[in-house]
Amino acid sequence: MLRLSTPSSAKGMTIVELLVASSIASVLLAVAATTFLTQRELVGHDLKRTAVNQNLRSAIDILGMNIRLAGENLSGTFPAIELTDGSSGAPDELILRRNLLDEVLKICTPITNATTDPLYFAIGGTTPGCIHSDQAQSFSSWTTYLSSQGGTALAYAYDPASQLGEFFWFSAITDTGSDMFVQPDDSWTQSYGVGQAAAYIIEQWHFRLDGENIQLIVDGNIANPQNVIFGVSDFQATITKSDGSTMTSFGVSDDWTEIQSINITLTANDTSSLQAIDRTLNASFFPRNVLSN
Image (cartoon, rainbow, N blue to C red; front, top):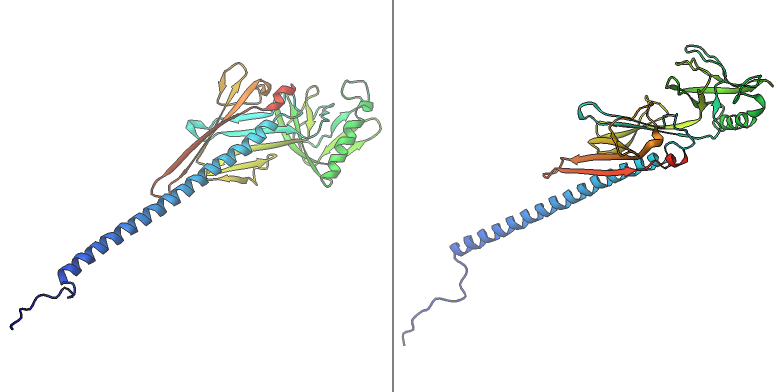
């Protein structure tokens, strides 16, 4: 009997079917690759966003800690807080000071600039604040501090009358039995009268923005700034006073004991990824030593 042949169900794929399958596989691989790259970009973006937020938070924490300490053991006539407003929207600068020793040395004889006049804080006679017998504690405290600094220490002279001041190095404190004085290592840059002028052992922290780094200048050492926070693009500050007014600058003639809050605004950005990251963080801090005045 003659049998008719039929197509085998087990024969291989045709060329058309192979091309279709290959095209589908290519599409699936492309979709998978795109999804992977997109997810990787999103993860990277999230990591950078987290880093930017952490940078801002760290900067705010450092500033806030020092704002709270500003003015410690200082009167309202001493410029414990200064704020410089950057021109035309440029970053601001903030200076914070606190007194490290309770004992303040009243300047009892005039000091002339460009000289190495001793800073007398006790003299023979009965001038209030300058009586020799009343200055034993001050002499002891400053001598102990000088010794703790290895025999050379930094102090700060300030005259509220002229609103001028300066850091000065000293290596000797002398008690002659009738007079007590501090001998500066270098010439004075300012003159100081008798009355309100005095010498302090202070700590000064000066914050400013350089490029994208918040720098800290300690005790006026401008030649050696320290980069404390990176990746900050703007630093703005204002001061709110107890009467509700807001100041964009605050100088030596302003009374820091009237401050209600120091308001900080920091901005950071990262343009290294496809999606630019811009973050701004605001915070307000109260200099608690206002309550001590």
